[in-house]
Image (cartoon, rainbow, N blue to C red; front, side, top):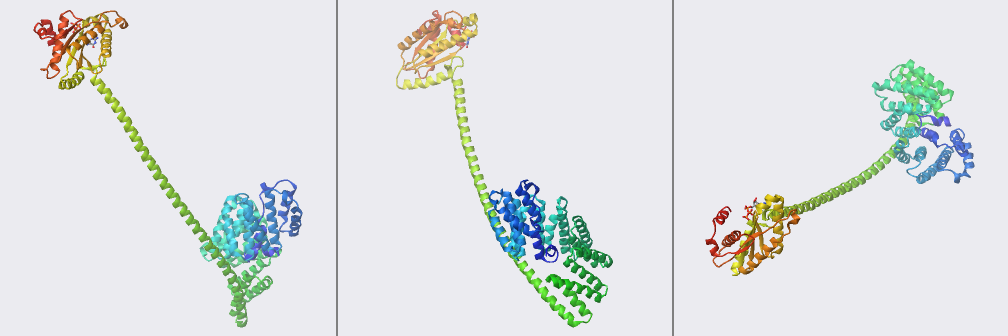
Length: 614
Ligand SMILES: Nc1nc2c(ncn2[C@@H]2O[C@H](COP(=O)(O)OP(=O)(O)OP(=O)(O)O)[C@@H](O)[C@H]2O)c(=O)[nH]1
């Protein structure tokens, strides 16, 4: 029974059960632990195909300790249980059992066991003719194979895909999976799996290219390689199948002698097992050779031998392969009745095969449609997600643009504000510099005159009095000469400070140049101005010069003038104050002179020459 199931190229059902039997082997070495239960599980895994009863008994035995098992041990036991059920013909129970455990096994952990369980389930479904479910399970299994990094699982999973796709005549797909496996050939440790992989590749390649003569030599090489790999593994059945595959190509090339040699080799291998399906296949090829050699009677003899075996198997595929040439040769030999009988038998078997294949193709198409629909839904979901992501990105970029704009605007405003403040400060500074005397900090002549002019007009318009005091430090040159310019500067600053402090808020005080100062006094008559000038003169005289580092006297000569009705501007007042001030100089300095017209008449040459210099 087992031998029949192991054949790879005749019955799909049998191939699948074979897969069920081998799929869970071997478990990775690293999953084994050296305690008693692990030993037992390893022993069970080793014996499960040869001794199903041992597995049944052992499973009962370990059931009592199932609660104490580690997760790994549990999954190993689950695989053994599912396998045992399938082996004992309880395929549906095995399916239910696996479906249940696949639902509860964590989706991200224990991928290895999940893969093994899916593989078993896909095989079991297929064995039970539930092709649609088998394909669905396979679709779940295949993407996991790349993740588990377990070459043996990959071999088993892809092999199942090759078988299923081959079975629904999707030969190119089968070859694609065979190709994936063949690429891993050098990384496969087990000689047995190497043998399978090489043979599957040769079979799939032949399935696609058998009819194109340009590829025959390639097919031959692949079968020869498969034969050699299987020889290493001592897999006699596959060796026989590989020899027959190679022989088929040689027959196509009409290299009959060589083909016969290979067929005889395959017969010897199959008979030693014995393996009837390959024996029948060998007879079929021998019949083909005889027919091509114009030996139809010999051909019929081989076909009848094959039929004898075929009838014991009830394998429709094999029988149809035998009945067809039998009908053809019978007709060739003129045995019309016989030919008709074989033809009818062929048709019966062929429609059986067609029906089975058709149902598998329908299952496949349904699964494919289902899969495409799921893919479409996923695409839509992805599109939605992409759209959402794109929208979110757009919103985010809009938000960041707005943020950037806001930052720019706020930043610009802040910069503008800073700029405006700086500019104002600069302006103020330059205005200050332009309007004030750099040394003393009081108004310079131009500014003071402008301001005073306005003030004068205002005062005059109200018929108020306006006075001007001018004073010039006495013998200032001597201070410079005696104590240096630094001391001279100190004196100028000190005088400005003292008078500025003493002056009223509406008064306009300015340095007119050099050691000469002026005070513009709105709303002040001659008398008041005279008193103020006296006060200021006294203040200057009392300046304590010790703090300059030297001790000396500071005095100033004052001139005072007050507006009259004839004065249309400040200029006449200034002029008169100036005359009065020089009059004070002439009088001996350190005094105050009120302007009187008589002073002007008595001006000395000194006065005139000094004023002319100004
Ligand atoms: N240290 C200092 N000296 C200045 C400044 N401006 C003008 N002077 C000096 O002031 C002096 C004025 O001299 P004079 O015009 O001869 O007048 P004076 O020595 O005060 O004599 P009288 O006015 O006749 O009393 C000059 O030596 C100028 O160099 C200044 O800003 N700092």
